Image (tube, rainbow over all chains, first blue to last red; front, side):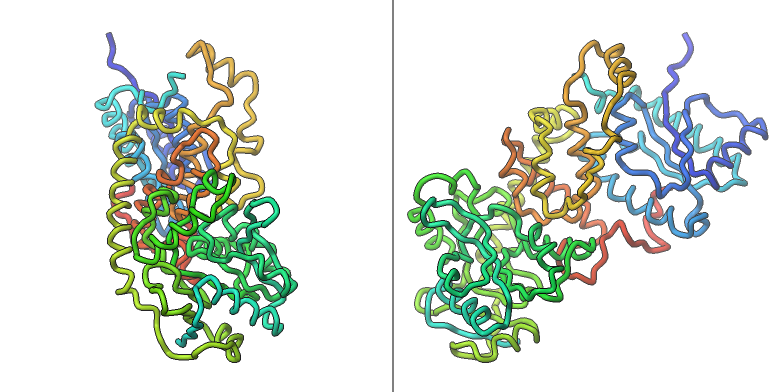
Length: 139
Length: 364
């Protein structure tokens, strides 16, 4: 039987990380087919609630990626996003979500290789943790 | 800055103070707690006629609504208002001002060292004279009454932050010392120039409140560790929030949750048939209304760092979820990341509205 493939939601900013994913694709870089991508205008658009909701809906992990700090298309969206994630981190710990399941990264449009690496890394991390069951409603 | 000593009990002294402010036209209205004598019901009253001041019990350990909520619109009316607020109500109001939900400009904020408030179910029925009498005795000695709100027992901010006027009402009010009124702003100083009483330059001495501070710190640790034990992981969350009936009462009474259209009451959470079908296909059964747990987690991410720990949410919960304890504990954690104290200073920005360019290298 083939290895268990986690399902990971990747929320990518339109200007950097989504383009980075595109570059990884056109450059034929290999990375695990574990992610489902949602494109957002900016990582600042990501409400921590999206992350909680996706874990609750059955995703095994969540990756949020935006422009490198300082490179935001909207000047400061990713700085604000970083603060929101800083608030979310201790909360995830509190409710018992393993830290490796939710990861953040900064990937520019030119970093296709970095995108492939980040996806590989989170896939391995989540695979090690196993399927997310802690937040999935049993009823 | 300066002080006034009125040789009366704290309760009578503050009534004199309010009479001075309203009677001499220093303010247009007074906002404070009141007990309606005929029915025994408590409410927060806005008084514009001096003759109605006698009905007020500004220092009563009762909070029917976090006054900062009602003060939002009042503070924008252009009228001058003297508002008697508990320290957490004042902090809640400061948090609201930061969110452009009010203004401190036309207010004279009067607050007091706070011994905590009773849960509402304790004061809604029957006579409270006995309760109040016992409360006053215990509070004057700097101890924690056993029947106040859990979050009050664990509250470390019982000394008002940045009130225009501070009244000594807990811990250090020794019999025979009269009512000590501490004046902290020019606005209040000007309004109280001709107020009767001994004017002096005393300062509120936090050392006299150390005993209370130590007792509160101990209770705080106890409350937080019990919450951490009971509410960790999914089992813990289900254990605590599983009872939630989804009434959203906790957010209605919350001084920080000001959004008139809360995300959780918006169309975002109106689920359509495919949602139900998908869930039912997976689980075979679905809890309704959905998202009761997500609602609490969402509120935790949205506003926990601003939680002032007033305890209104726990008080109104129909199924006795310790909402306030969970929020206080989580709020203390999230606020500490930014060295933030909700309501400490109106100039201090909400942590998720600002940023530094170099921070949190571990993220990303």
